[in-house]
Length: 275
Image 1 (cartoon, helix red, strand yellow):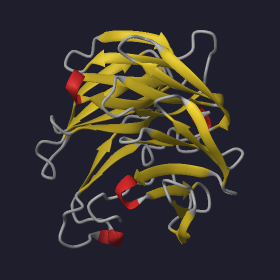
Image 2: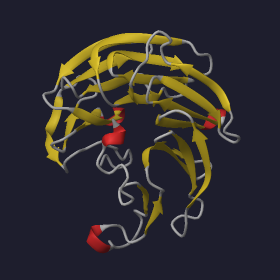
Image 3: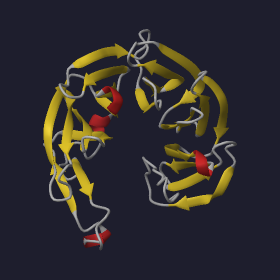
Image 4: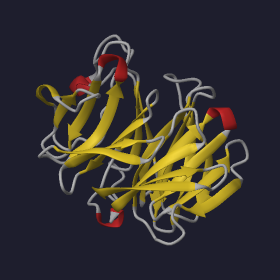
């Protein structure tokens, strides 16, 4: 599917943009004053990011015709400079990536139902396995379960998987249908998973892997974040570009939808301000 996107071989689209949000005044067209563009050779498509805060490195999964690669960008001198310091070719189409500091590991989900664990320093493969050995899945989302060696994997279809990436053990819950993103609340271990095909949100108990609720929302949900201290779940409306707010405990709407911009893919809360 990604190979048919209109910007696939457009160098202006296939870039990594780094913005300095601490700049004192806006630059041209309202952009932050200091920003850096890392050009990538076409045809390639940067997909997802994960940040290694202890190393000041940004990890980028990149899709290409023959598989892809994983780039590591050194941000230790940002905003003065930034550069790709490592690029590891891979023979599978990558999706989400997760840096796990306490294990010095990088977990990468493949687009087609596999997960691969790398030693972060050497990029040697420690484990490569299917999420479900009986099925070839299309992976649409994933989240690390906080403080555990587990990852939740959202497949296009009827199941949500919890995989222990250290042991290979897995559990599964039927969620009626799912196609999209999710967020995991770290204290009570609840997950909210979007179904943008049938316009619903699945609420899952991560510990027991049971479906607690399925809430019809009437729009395609894509992009989630949660702040349990504020009892706040925020959800992006994919195409119309609104942000919806709910009680994280009850899924009752909190306020009127906020119009932002068309085609929302990610929503992030600032835990210090609630913005």
